[in-house]
Length: 144
Image 1 (cartoon, one colour):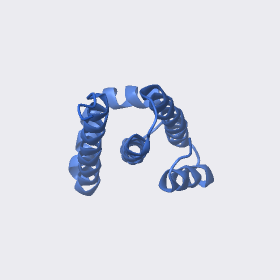
Image 2 (spheres, rainbow, N blue to C red):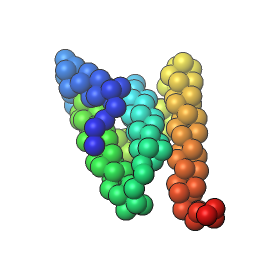
Image 3 (cartoon, rainbow, N blue to C red):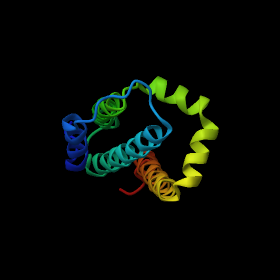
Image 4 (tube, rainbow, N blue to C red):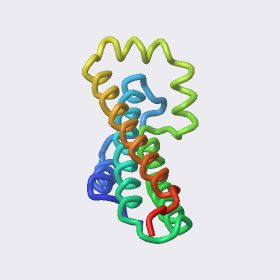
């Protein structure tokens, strides 16, 4: 499964970046990683919708295509977290143990917070769109 152009550009930018991996992620880096991961998720949902809309085969074949997207975007997410010198599990631990510092950072950086909220809203909309598409595929054909 091929990733869409924006995902490939993001992946290339992360790989080509000259930033050294920090020894420990900072709150700012955590928020940056969260935003970039959200942008990757948005691209993934757009790709999932595109695949679901264009798929003409069986449900099993569609599932295989969607799993391939999961794998491709999972690798992209792993690269993203590695870029920040962390893993997804450590990222989650950091978020859980630094909630007040993250909240304070976002209160002081309303632009970052607003962008995160905007991306989150777009992702939720895309998820609902995908749920609708998948539900429509499961409704048996009633016309003859």
